[in-house]
Length: 111
Image (cartoon, rainbow, N blue to C red; front, side):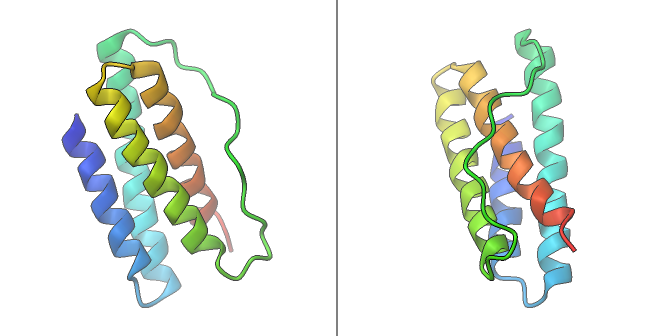
């Protein structure tokens, strides 16, 4: 399962270096899709009850660097998720991955 989180970090890295908004959104969407798959597997394999954790800090819509800040936030949460998964703390993993998914959702759904 950690391979999925590695793929997410690769997509985030490519999104950060994308030359246009469409490329950034595509990579963010691919990262988000991998996180969705990871969450489903985590819930099924470790018997977690699916629920929404508290909202992470947000980035204002008018911020010109909003997408990059959201990508950095998602990257940090995925790395925290990798650490907590390795430690067997699956609920913390769930929370971190959920927060990363939400940050990427904000990018994908922005106009």
